[in-house]
Every structure is written in C-alpha cells, then in structure tokens.
Length: 110
Image (cartoon, rainbow, N blue to C red; front, side, top):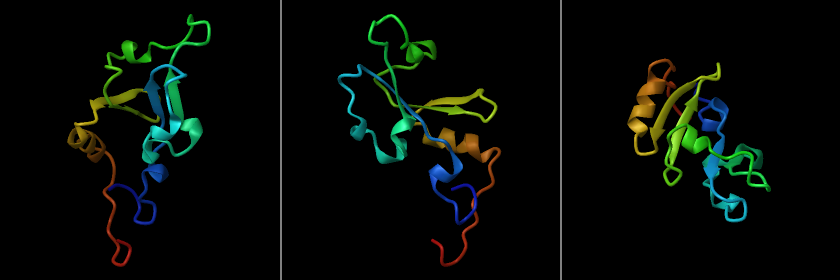
C-alpha cells in the first residue's frame, strides 16, 4: 500500500522479524507463515538457554500474552512505535498512514 509502484512488497519496505514464545523442542519453523519468515535468520525464539537460567521473558517484559499474535513496530531509531494485536490492522494502517507516502498505481502494473 505504501512505497514506489515497483517496490510494493513488505520485504522491500520493512525488515520483518518474527519472535515466538515457546520451547525450542516444540517450535516448528516451517509453521510460521511465509510473510513472517522471509529468511530463517529472521525467526527468533523467546526461550531460555539450555541451562534454563538466561534468556526468555520478552513477552512478559512488554506485557504481551504469549498465546496471541501481536505486532510490534520498531522505528528506525530503535524506539517502539506501536504494539497492537493482529486484529487491529486498521490501527496499524493509520499509524503508517501518518508518515508514509501512499503508493501510486501505474497503469499496467496492478
């Protein structure tokens, strides 16, 4: 919806990183929708290390229910711009509409 007509994919406009909650042994990378796993290195797991002493806790720290799909938008300067449930896509659209230029449709490209 935003950007140049020839560069309309999400991957061309944004760095998409997926962070999941769960145990390493139970998570199946290929069950993540393709949009949210443009590359295997962009899928991370919020889990503890093998000693169960370090790591994990990001969901709790941000007040996010690990059982829900939540979008966290990080601005280029590293600040959290927005946290929203996946059901609030209109709110996410409004967030981006405030500063992004809508893509112009060029006849013959869509």
